[in-house]
Image (tube, rainbow, N blue to C red; front, side, top):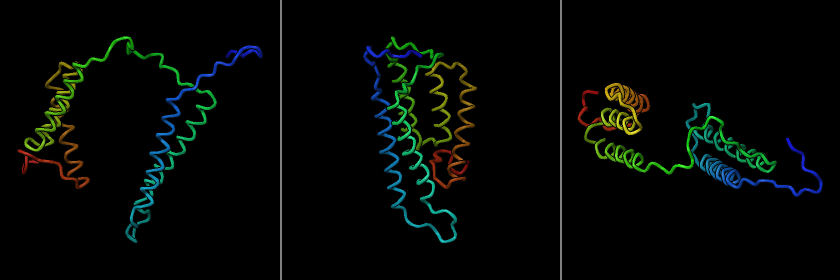
Length: 171
């Protein structure tokens, strides 16, 4: 750690991005707290009201925003990770981005027809293919297990209807 001499001007770095992030966290936290205050009361047999969790999350966001602003004001500047393997001199790979967007669009178009269980597997396998995987059968199997599992988790566990498509009556 170097100590600045009295005759040297101070070259303090102000990281505006950290202040912007702190402001964003504060705004989101304040909105979550406001929204929690507008929730209706729960049932009389509930120990916690429906607003308990949003109050915790909103408060945590505001506290984190204040802490981030304080450490930024003290001069804390984030350092790049030493093991980062991204070459920042290279441009973005827009072809890969376009392929990923295409996979997502195909998923959106086909989900009502084929079901989440099928399109979720195709989404996973398609994304892994675009990102360089060449084990298609394994990727499709992993995607199928994950998508069927999430379908049951949402549909049965949470009661949120997800399209069954051509698998209606099978799942």
